[in-house]
Amino acid sequence: MNDRLISADKIFLNVGGTSFIPPIPGLKDVNYLDNKSIMDLGEVPEHLIILGGSYIGLEFAQMMCRFGAKVTVIERSERLLPREDLDVSIEVRKILEGEGIQFLMGATAQSVSESNNLKNVRVVLHSGETVDLSGSHLLVAVGRVPNTKELKLDKVGINTDERGYIRVDDECRTSLPHVWAMGDCNGKGAFTHTSWNDYEIVSSNLFTNEKRKISDRITCYSLFIDPPLARIGLGEDEIRKLNKKDILGAKMHMSRVGRAREASETKGFLKVFVSAESKQILGATILGYNGDEVIHSLLDIMSAKQPYTSIMKTVHIHPTVSELIPTLLQQLRPLE
Image 1 (cartoon, rainbow, N blue to C red):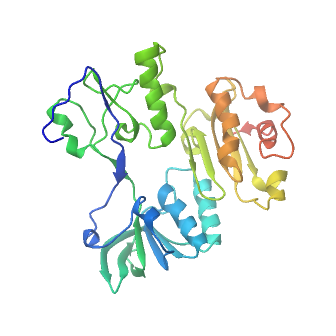
Image 2: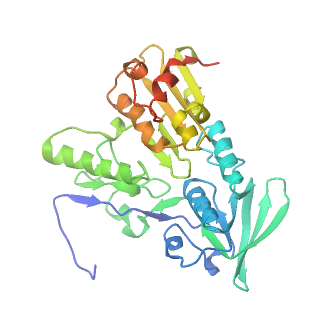
Image 3: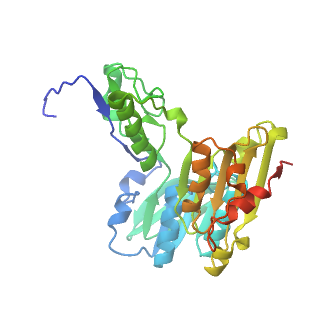
């Protein structure tokens, strides 16, 4: 900063991330939106075109659709949320299409231009067909990148991966022993809760002598559409690659949940997978009413390393969504 040299025994990097802007011809010459600038809009878009059918793109798609905008989502993959299980992708698309959101799947933006205050996107489908779209606004939501490019970390011997994320060990320490990297820039989680946990890990290890590790963290996150999607642990696709003989699974539709029926919010489902031998919960997904809150009853059992049987017969308060968790666990069966 103005050639000022700052020295310290310990240095902590927490520079965050920013939207990835793909090298689409013409995009840099267009007044597009990202996840930050879209929050500054003073009007509802007449027609919002979204590049990217993943978490950020879908959250804004539903939001703007409910505000009254026409919304078209362009997604390169053949399905939404390709990192999620197939049944999740199908159900999320069904929910959003039911609200009027339009999707172009297996589609790549070939070029972008702007004329007469309209954003024009030429899209090439995997079939080879070309589709031309015009909208009042364009949101780019195809991923995030770390804010590390300008730091020139290679000059001081701090290692990064091919995407620019700072490589860290299990305690957030970089390749330089007196430098730590936390938050979005270390590639260990792109969420507020994982960033905060990075701080807790570093603080505990350095100042309270309580040994904590990134590897102790259970994967957990939500997609904040309505109804929300909540995920913990392994997904079904990952679990099916394990020893099927040891795995039990159960799935229940939200239409069976009294609280969901009372609120007329019966879209989605709950599912959970456990180890028959260790009785540990391996992963769970809730796509449905209050799922982003209910999932914590399973997450806490996982974190405490308690068997799923410890809550399988627990009496939960009626009428809540959580009261169906014991019922879900009682339906566990071997994977087919």
